[in-house]
Length: 272
Image (tube, rainbow, N blue to C red; front, side):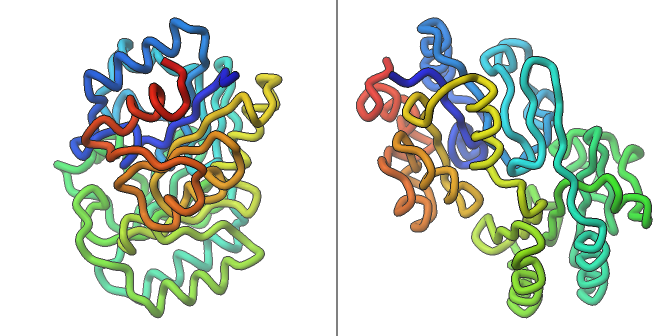
């Protein structure tokens, strides 16, 4: 019997406009009414109300979750962070400095953000803060960094892929030191602590809830979801997912702009 659901957000639970479709909201509400716990497993920080303009209506569906690719867990009003190595942060900042126009953002404890180039004014709401709250990158930032993002444009409108030589250099450097993900079709690099993954984040929450793996179902679509999708017998990849995610999951449903979530809950997992 499935007692808890963990959802990736972008490309999975949210449609292409970053919204919960009415049918999806209704399905989630139905799950809650049946006593099934709902949690997120996302690369985003715990700023969903600001970033997604969620009201109490959406937020109260969820009992917490794994954030920042497993670098942060929130449950029962308690937030736990898993910081990156200061050496990894310093190295990544130095490497990015050699690529004009390339952005690096340090996501820190307390949901603070530091940038080499702050996002444009219009993009700040999607990050969940005002432009004046964006911090410059200083050596002190490395102490509190839990996740690194590397991207062009403003990330919410990125169309430029990360240079291949930098991708390979950072992938090699991070091996054994940090988790490295190339996501969004090669347009975003995400780096977290070696112990911080969505799978481990969900595992920490699963253990806290006293559930076994068979009582959990997980949903995802991108490279940072692979370990999570492969780690549970009830795992669902979206129809719009990357090939690797579809191969890692036990089940594949429809796309995030259609009935993918509701079909998975009704037809594949037989929850509703």
